Image (cartoon, rainbow, N blue to C red):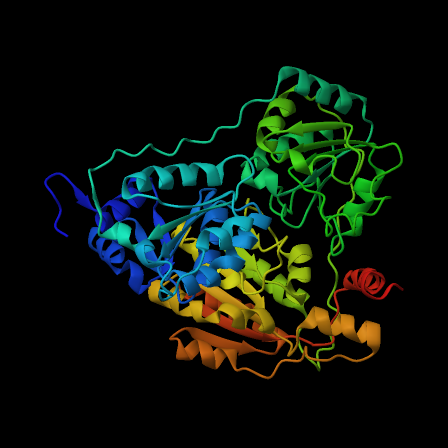
Length: 554
């Protein structure tokens, strides 16, 4: 249909609306239903379009982009049904980890929905459980404002995904050019003066204050305010798993991660405090050792700050609940806190290697080599598995969002595409994706994207021939394991087939040189690292005991 005078065809209007909303990158897998819009995006050259190899990978790339920038990541599925269903895990992960995403899915021609049309799926209903809003555009002229307000909603309050389904026939419709509402810049209101006054009084009375920092500190970009407050209070700072990076691991007040795989130092500090300021942390299963009633000292006061009111007082009794941005509260509180001497000075030791060199390398040795070789500002992403237990304890994280993870959804395959998204978001920044041989295969096809884009990205695959945590758990519970062993894959050869430089590392003396080589290339590389399959991260044993109780009642 030709454009009437002054009107725009839908394909052009949709492409222009995405660009007008300030979107700088779109992660996608193209589909035939939306070829006209892809054509317009390609011709205009803005925003930048990153062609992933699988929609799940595209969703994780958008998540890595969002984590690295603090702005919503945008993912577009060009195929209506299978594209949307492939996206679900990455969208659910974003919801669980409070990652702002704008999710655009193609939809079939709405005129033929009831005729068994190819690739039809109720995308709105499919994604609704995992989104702050899930809608289908009813007309072309509302698309620009749907996109703008979708970005705004994704970033506001507790961040999360927003979904818009776009029927294919909108591309052939016409509409007058519309000046869309620009996405409002989300600003966190300062907390009420009375709220801050009460918090100050509690902090002044506390003799042993401590802070438990979660991802809300990172999302509100308040790491500097957190560091200032803990210095003034002389308070130790523990983090949740998703809060790693909210304070530098090198900071003298940092006591490491709290939880099943955390540090004894963090547990001692939080358990000894007479007031714990819980900043942007949901107090989930992993952080609280399965909601242990003795996590906090008897009589300790709890002050919880969270953008999501439903998180406050959910399991633990809170003495003061503050609904709002952790950053706004920390910024309002810190300048009013008088300087005091620290009451807790412990620092967490790092677990030494637990391997037998005859069987393979230690994860601890690999991470130590990475810490030594990685340039300042490197962003690391970690997948799900044994390797991440070591990463959370041993990686030097000196920048906010320096460690990207799937925390509350624990989704395998996250690390490589998330690192790609971060590398796209932060040009020139080195990204390192760490995965086990079980998780890497889920999305290893995205290695081609890193090669196509020439990204300074190193994929590190820990090869131990099993789904390691499950194997160790099964052997502890039954003395044997089933269905968790993995057949051998020559990951270095796979990478070379993708055109990516690679090495296999099996000797500790080669680690330093391998990292230096891979990080010097300026483009993608892969290191396949042979890990001792019998090495167990010691804190895993306590989690296994808890799982025995949960699964077997003993």
